[in-house]
Image (tube, rainbow, N blue to C red; front, side, top):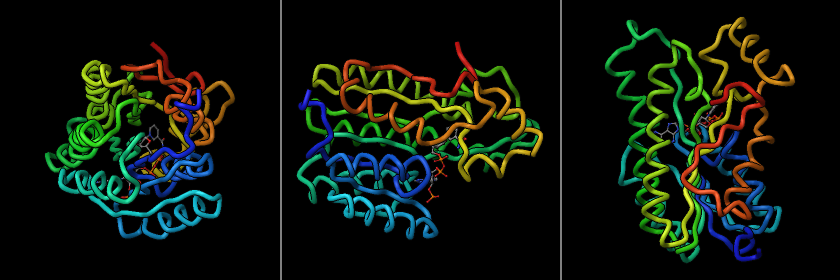
Length: 251
Ligand SMILES: NC(=O)c1ccc[n+]([C@@H]2O[C@H](COP(=O)([O-])OP(=O)(O)OC[C@H]3O[C@@H](n4cnc5c(N)ncnc54)[C@H](OP(=O)(O)O)[C@@H]3O)[C@@H](O)[C@H]2O)c1
């Protein structure tokens, strides 16, 4: 089982500075992995630095790196920098995402393009670069959304731009399987992070809370073990989109 443990592994966490990605970086770092903590906005720099310090405090190694991953060159640079600092990549986790909640008739071309640039395009090239740089036996995990299993309006472009992850995941799992690389997507339900609230009304927040089995939004602490399992002893799971959402949606 040590073969699939985290000690000594090199992990790239896209959007790994804060919230879900930040918790993944800290948890994996505390388990003995070396972490590339990616962040995008200048405002996330402080979170990235704090996450690096937390990993180091726990005895691990980490560095922070900025990149707008809608630019493929930034994704390439993230993997190259990680490989040159830590001697390769074993696990790649993509938490980057952008949300929009709007009726279709009000959605602009610019909004559509911005959503697909992050949720689809960047997600595809993250998988490609991970596959190119990763050691055999590696793990690739993307973060999707449980809205893929919801029959609802208003999230057409958000859920629509996350939905290709499901097939990218299947195709990559099939192509990379011979190298022992597993590829999966974890699809959370609504999470209690600053990502969720700006697009939701108080009534919608109450609805989302009521749709889970404990009447609360998801907690990032309940998603991290799912990601960790897929990256370790759960290596036999591949090509899957796993809904972790307290009963919010199912299919
Ligand atoms: N919170 C929820 O309710 C929920 C539910 C289901 C799924 N998810 C998914 O879970 C993931 C993590 O969300 P979270 O709740 O932890 O919130 P979050 O920290 O705001 O996650 C979104 C991340 O995407 C990054 N990002 C945005 N544009 C980017 C770009 N062009 N290049 C690279 N990175 C970019 C953001 O970085 P900057 O802030 O530095 O720009 C941010 O770190 C997302 O993929 C989200 O779709 C969230």
